[in-house]
Length: 341
Image 1 (cartoon, rainbow, N blue to C red):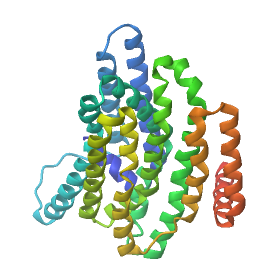
Image 2 (spheres, rainbow, N blue to C red):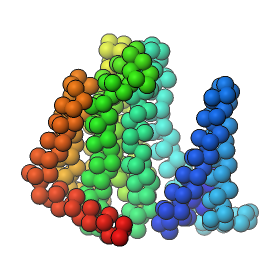
Image 3 (cartoon, rainbow, N blue to C red):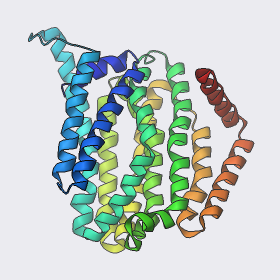
């Protein structure tokens, strides 16, 4: 919490390169301490101490980069809007944080401990494969906040941003799905092979989330916390309701269906964003998702080479049939080339 204030100031000033360096240093320090302690047999104290060191370094480095002197004051005119907006934001965030309780609270009770392990592996791989999308999501709030009074710009930014979000998630998940049938047994043993079957459903949930995360950030930037809280409540209600029904019947598969059951809740984000800024262009993002699904869903059941060939063919066909998507990808590549130059 001490590091949050300077980090947010740096994010507002778009100093994401500096933020990234600090976070990487702190994360490497975590690994540098916790992994040797794990190998030395220190048990759960290893990740506890590693995480503590990471947070401590975050606080120190962020404060050195953006020092803010402590000065106890009370300014009512400033505090009232801060607390009003902050409490609403925190409440919205608290609702969606209940998602983390789905596995330990519902899966463990209704499907058993083995299902918890299988699902947790699938979720962890999906999260790791979507790390870059989380970076873009973190950056987007500060960027979108600068365009809240310009509907056309924020709508165009969202339409393009959705494509980049999907690109940062979908291909990586599809490639892993194709390779998971030999990779998971190699890393964890044959008894965890079931997690490769569940992974595509979990990945589809992550892809849906990636597509609509920018909608939530745009609403947050416009101080529409209540609207985001409504979406979060709808998401949790649908997920938990589906889990309660499906888990006792289908076991681990029930969690995958619960992830897909949350799809209607994203309509709340679309509606509220459209009311403010107009409807964004979903065509390119949905084209990429459609091109990903065949390899993602078939990956665990077919040879690796066949899955990768299917993925490449679907992406090639999607880009060939959608000139608008092709132009956006070429524009992104040209920007990257200029930055490298």
